[in-house]
Image (cartoon, rainbow, N blue to C red; front, side, top):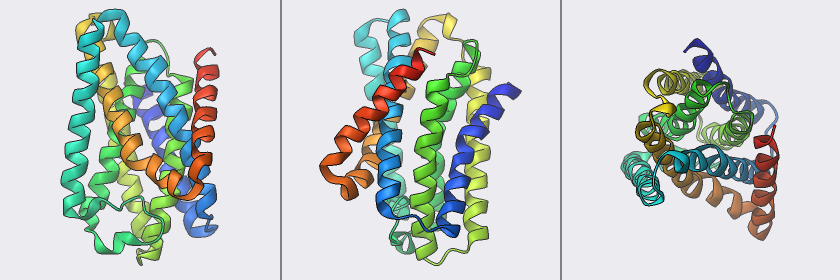
Amino acid sequence: MAEAFGWGAFGAAALLAGALIAYLLTPGRAVIAVVMALGTGLLIGSVSFELVDDALEHQDVVWVALLVLLGAAVFTVGDWLLSRRGGGERKDPTGAQADGQALAIVLGSVLDGIPESFVLGLTVLQGGVSVALLVAVALSNLPEGMSSSSGLKAAGWPRRRVLAMWSVVVLVSAAASAAGYAMLDPASGRTGAGVEAFAGGALLAMLANSLLPQAFAVEGVVTGPLVVLGFAVSLALSAV
């Protein structure tokens, strides 16, 4: 369990790194968008090769598809509720967070990090952390930290407050990873497969709602090739 906690914290720590980059270096939106697109492709690959593929080995395709949809629905409802409370612009790099509520922004960031961290813990349980998924999580968290922190900086949040927020998210993500290790057993067939499918749906919904719109708003049609490049890298890493 300690190993899963550590890997979950490691993957989420990219949020803190992104925040420091945003406050110290002020990266351009184009740089953030490129990393977002690459991270999206990596996570799509991880969902395909690490989650759905494994779930299909233990469960019927119809049941897996339904659980993917359920995971996406649960995430979407949570995202919608937090957006109504002022957390919808949590990843905006221009300072739109000024109109939102601090608690909703924090909870929204926690919501984004839980599915991927939970799955990280599951991969540790399967015999060792998935390199492809770990890289995907880190590379998606880095631009999220950069983009959100750039917006929070523009909205007037002091650096100490932003780092404290991301530290909370890192701890929750590490705990989610440990929970994935402690609560799940993929060898149990239906239970493990069901959770993998559910988490895969939640991750896909998060990517579609959060990362892809931000990337496309800046990179336009170039977003597609960047996502595919990330997917190809995930394919290569899954073979390691």
